[in-house]
View 1 (tube, one colour):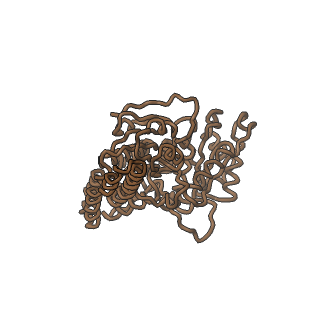
View 2: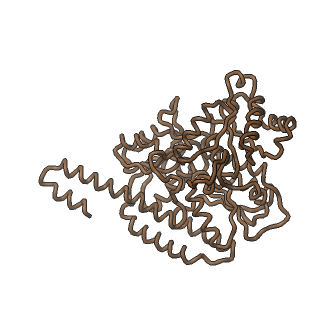
View 3: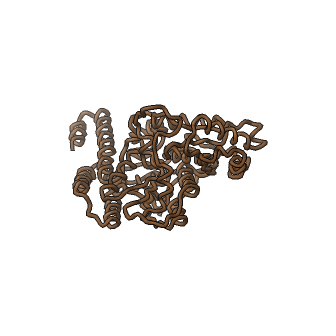
Length: 454
């Protein structure tokens, strides 16, 4: 069991964490015809908007209540009212995701009360769903905001049902899954004859498709109709430990049982996932997945020579850190440094001695003997100073193309993960050997060259 250590610094020097409001905003971007709105200053929204645009390279619909110094002191009722009226008039979304920020949480605005009073004063808003989620950015982190937003969606929009559809399954994906991951999961579930309802579904809204016309809201995702029919599903599958609270809330409302998969990256987790779907649907696993499993086994055999005893440092959100570190340990690597954004129970299951709650300066401090750094694009300077390669994962990835289409789940995704990281490790080993060869005395160079080819 890993020991959790907290960085005692007075400030974050090289930030790793992305705040709760951004996690909630991304979750709302997975709803169809939705417009997230941050209840806070304009700068809070502008910063988040830039971050999401740089990562996905898409237009991101994101609004703000534009709190000023005066409204922050007096209260944000007027700002919320005006924002909702403007959003309804100009965009007419099906859902508004109203997300608090640190400044309004510190003020203590009763946003639920505000929304109730605004609805009484403006009945024209009755056809627009308003889901408020409390996400103070001075506590928690990205995955907490995502989980809270999904739980509030279920609270406000899901309904109990008198019927059960034996072919319908709810999927609650964690924030660490890409649109490509969600699309792969959807394809796997559908191969068993099941119909997945995914909440939220960023694979429909942030997958990089070009729309036929401009819309001021999201361009796809989970519809209100689908959310309201989730109570008729036979099972809920939550992917990522932080999604358990949302699955439990849906069970309370509708009686739909749930199963949590901490990860579906790696051979055994994929086996467990497909075996569960086979049992649930009373259907055999499709032959293409048996072939993909054999391909993964072969990739593991090919790759384990390059992963064995490799020293790897990881900095990521808790569930992503657990997923990657557990899979790398399965491949024979050693996790010599681990840093996460916020304390979470699953961090104690990370296969390393210590997990630090801190920033990228902390990972640089404890990863001095690592051979690979795994984190998002903000870790590129740390990797350069450490003199090791960086494998980018998480959010944001702004200096590489195709971040939304990465697939690291299922047999195929795990196989490709072996190749991606394995090739980095091979390249780094050859570069190190080459540097040693160039600096070695003349008589030792033949030995160094021979080692490089083995």
